[in-house]
Length: 181
Image 1: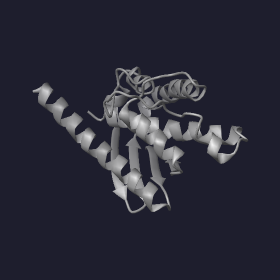
Image 2: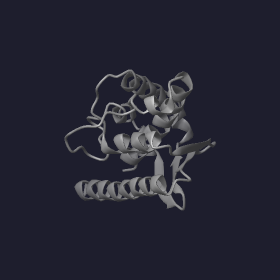
Image 3: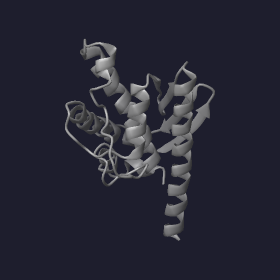
């Protein structure tokens, strides 16, 4: 039941890493950087989390037992959002494979390949492009990450993203619990 939200956290971590790497590689003016997509906006409504169709999220669901064994939380904070993921020691290798596969997909998106991403991935990428700052701390238990800004408009967007993530995660867990009965 934690799997989809964990996918979202991992996607956010990987998109941030990819965006930072892209920004370091590019020497174009700041305005031109925004033209290079880290995500593909779609015209159709897509699910907030989509393990079946989002090419980034699919990487997570392909690692058997990984999502089911992880725990993930998202919190709204004064200047953005905080996410915590706990990864069991016996799943660290699966997580490393997942990250590698996700980064390969992210590189394709950055190179211009068109892919329909889930709502979470699209939203997170837009936050990065808006200037949100990512802070990530790897711990023995997993990952703590924050997405923050000093710009009140960006803070509101980050907090809205976090609130949607919390709401969609709760709905997903409730649906999974109901279908398991």
